[in-house]
View 1 (cartoon, rainbow, N blue to C red):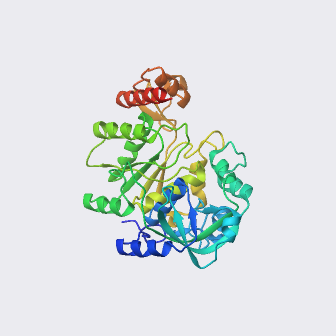
View 2: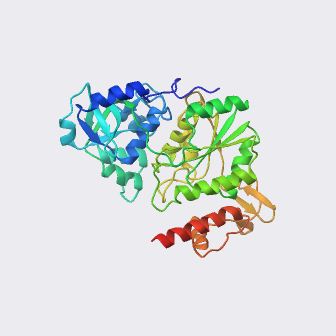
View 3: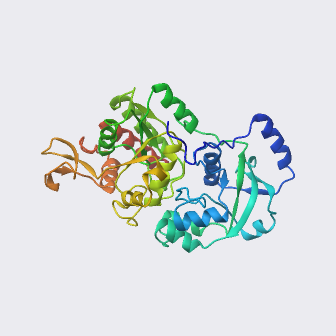
Length: 386
């Protein structure tokens, strides 16, 4: 089986006995309240999803990732995993000491072993990671709202947050064990933050023809407010997997990671995370992790040229935009279809949302009717709640 990134699957979750000891110590420790998305990062570190990271990045790793897309030891890594605080908070903290990280309920979620605290240039971070300094970009907007100081150091997790999707949330250890039980040696992962439509299904099944199994792995962490809500997406995945995917060749699980909308850099990041889950291949489609017009259509393909196959180890599958061609009589892409675009069934996301909001089922060549019905019901429920 493919090794985790960096060679070892991290585990920073304390045992029950160690948790009690940490809670006692925490009573006398300085405390920092952290946000829900930071709690998500904490759990991802502790569960090994962000292997080889054992905590929040120190200055050396942070600067190397921002400027070179690698950790300071040279290992590929493209997205900073950081803990920000205001300067007055940082000034009260001593290096080489422990800090209690407090969740919104007031409980101790984790212990931070503070190794570093440092200032940073927000515009430089935005420009390097998101390729823009415009605060209309959701990732840039978040950077500009962050505190002035970053804290670095290993963490130990005491408490996981309630998980409404726990039945689908398999950890990297669990997916690796499941792959072994199924006898799969080659596994392709598919990343999405949207409901699966026919083009997605086509890409997944094309990839599945050349590997042993498919991990359908939607992201269920923090997303934009105008993305389809997670509970609606889950229902869509449930119905499509049950009716249209081979049960012996498909695993449906979720990845509890926040979207950064960093386009090409996030494509590398998502590939590395799937490597930690035990996947050998990763589907990279059109405008992966994009938002607005900040990235080129296939920039997420081109960035893989900046890393050698030996560095990443996980193999990318690059797919162009897929569509239904009336003359071909099936799904195709620009690589396989010789016909004019007038024969292609292609709908924009805006057009699809307009149709769904009117209760109209998009063409069967674009989406499965079962999925469309779930989306329509979900949109109606949202409208009634407003």
